[in-house]
Amino acid sequence: MKIGVNCGHTKNGPGSGAVGKLNESKETRVVGSYLMPLLRAQGHTVIDCTVDKASTQTEYLDEAVDIANRNKCDMFISLHFNSADSKSANGTEVFTYGGKQLDRAVKAVKAVSKLGFTLRNSGECKDGSDLRVIRKTSMQAFLLEICFVDGKDAGQYKIIGAKNVAQKIASAFGEVKKTPAKKAPAKYYKKCGKKETSIAEGLKAIGVDNSYSFRKKIAKANGIKSYAGTAAQNIKMLSLLKEGKLKKV
Image (cartoon, rainbow, N blue to C red; front, top):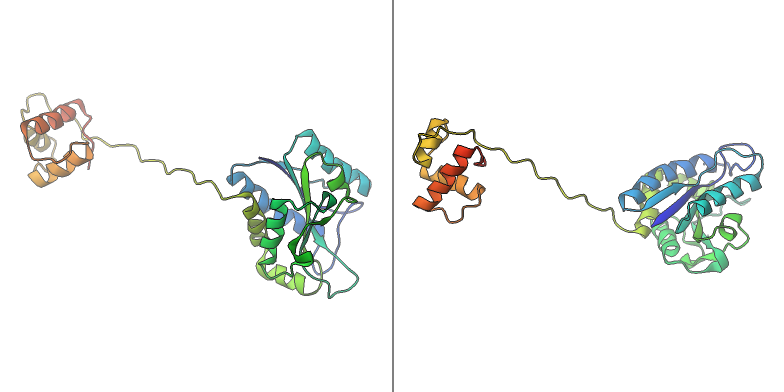
């Protein structure tokens, strides 16, 4: 999936965010700086739709939308922090076009609320049709109000930290893809001379333990099952040793 992530508002001036105990413009970028790598680690393509500077609020919003539309994103996320005249206002909420209950939007807001924030609107998506980044984007989009910049929310956010918030949002988009562990390159015993006529002689010639118990371990490492010291098994091991292809234990 190609996901456009907008760290809400400009850094300062026209289009900048709310300021209280938290600075919205600053914190959206901190959350975004953790969120984008997490989404990439899940296998998604991430487009940074953040706009740091604009002449007007409308210019900032249109530029963020244009980045997402131009890159043909499949999903658009706009990160925000809420504000209100009442310092007692609190909680996390999410907005979509027409209040459509987008699965990932619902999962994201519910996950964030589990960090200790009130789940506003019972976790259902609210109508954000009047929000420019929701109305003008050509893909599914949601605007997430992580918490309020004042009151108990601000204190809780400072305890939790942006990284935990980002992890909760990312959880709505899947699990981090695990990269298969790379196998260490095989190491081989140095070649023995051509004159050695048995694996025991060959190992002794290069200074390696040639006891039956150790030869059994070498056999296993080289795909020779149920080693019993048979002529065929020993000949195969000696042949590998003379070619420098006998894997080390």
